[in-house]
Image 1 (cartoon, rainbow, N blue to C red):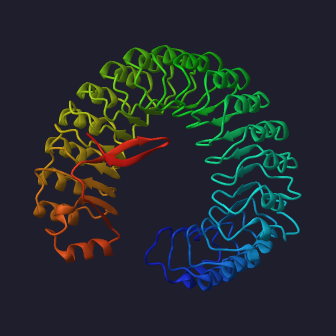
Image 2 (cartoon, helix red, strand yellow):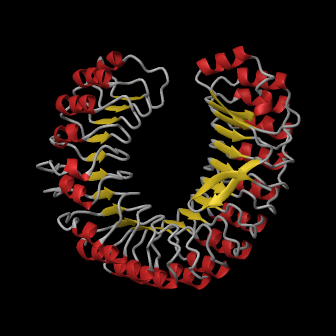
Image 3 (cartoon, rainbow, N blue to C red):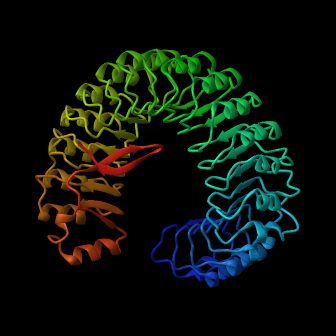
Length: 535
């Protein structure tokens, strides 16, 4: 009995009537299905009365008529995602009348504004999560119309919206059950933050990632009022200093997640406070900060850590990271991207002390050798290994990973120049769960690439600047790897490969991406990696 269908990004979806025959369907994802229209959604609404979850994200052919029909016919809907769907407020009354609706996403619905929301007579009393990110024409005035008489709203997402002012905070007064508020990318005022601290007394999660205007005064006032806070995101809040960290660690000792990437004014001494006071942390993101070995030694007291991100932390060395390996046995995710002071000794400590490790990023830690790979091969749960730019690693180390880490599904060995076909053979034999691989700038040839055809799960492959790769070898590998859905190649190959090959592979569901650059990579930007030139 079919209860769930995911057709997201389907290029070939045309027959909504076929879905409508699934009378017991409860969950349906149609994100980015460009061909679906109101007529198709109407068919589904009539046929699938038991729907509880439906996602129409980026379905640009759907409007008020189709969404309104869903709301009228599918009374059991609990979760409705209308992100970037060109609806207006015409269909909102029907949506808000859904008695069981708990999760409503209106992200990027630009046709909804304050004036149109003002005509609504009531909010949705059952609503628990409301996402109005990127609704650029909605302020606290319109937001109040949607949340009127709501006694159950637990999470409000208002990212990249209007400024967070005192008036905005006052509009939240009646939301007594609000536990999570995400204001990422908004302009934040100090009075607004202070008022949120005063009015929203039940908050357990606050996200201010990339918010302009966050200062020590406003943030310190906010966290002081929320001693039971569990999650805090202050990524790229570049005006805060040790003052904020002192207040956070003193007031929010039960924090489980702290994300503070690129807080450039926080000095190294402040990170010691995190380890001294926040012993319940499970997730900690310190990417691009001034933390040093003393800070890591202190943070090693957080024995519950499962995710630790230390990318671009240029002051840390093996000495500090070794303490993490010895004390944080629950660590599952470790990011050391471009932390140049890290080498084999600390990776050995991590591999020995963290048996549940699932993901590690050691990209551009140029002193890493095969010894680290051999150590990590003992981590049987490892599924993601990002090691681009480690020139001392050879096929010997990769072979050890292939034999020991059979759950590996993502591997990036770009610019590991000493990895060749000898490393591909054991990978092809043992890594049967591998789904994504980047072989760019390695010494792999036609033989090694073709050997990967034995990995039936392989879906995503990036192959740039392989000197030993010929057009004939590439054709053979592409045809043999039957599960490929995405391939990135050097543009120079485009004219060398036969057009029928592309037609055949695209019909099989494979998309091609072509690189014109001689040296493509990533330049770090606040909160993300941005494509650019790399030395």
